Length: 119
Length: 115
Image 1 (cartoon, rainbow over the protein chains, first blue to last red):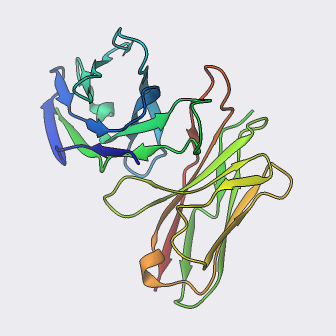
Image 2 (cartoon, rainbow over the protein chains, first blue to last red; image 1 turned 60 degrees about the vertical axis):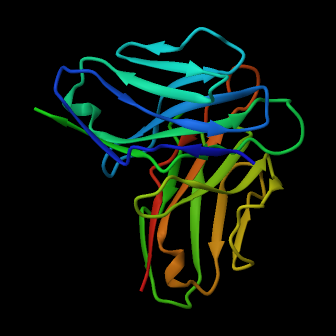
């Protein structure tokens, strides 16, 4: 079974500054995917960024980037130039790779980090 | 087409009542997932369908929970004899789950409150 740990229940950042959210995970799988999802207050979950474990290059999406350390089983999210609209719960999630054997493809989530961007 | 939709958005049930929650996935998505999100927590997996086949129901917390997807499209999550601990947001997600198209798209959720 996989576990995902987010050790920062809440964080805050000044508008236009940079913030890093931490995530560690535990798995015996060699091939898998990692995700950061954003859940704004009373709004639905949307994907922020994803990383395929076989890729060494860290994923980036505009102001969002990850630091993926496979050996350390660490997957942190960096948000640059923070905006008020970034205020949300952020969830780190794990999914085993397609066609990698038995078991289904559910997401295993961490408990989340509540990020507040301060004007 | 449109995103994943769920209905109702809010449901209040008295303890002991049965409830049915509906999910309309994105057209063409063969995979459908149900998750339960307790207040202040991350979503937890309940069950998974591939087309009409329920391939994994290991996350269903008790035999009071039942899910179906009879025609491989719309899915219904039914909770019998609701208890207070069933109060949560129930999220549905769908995915194509092939090649590089493995992202799960979430609906807005149904907030269930059991009084």
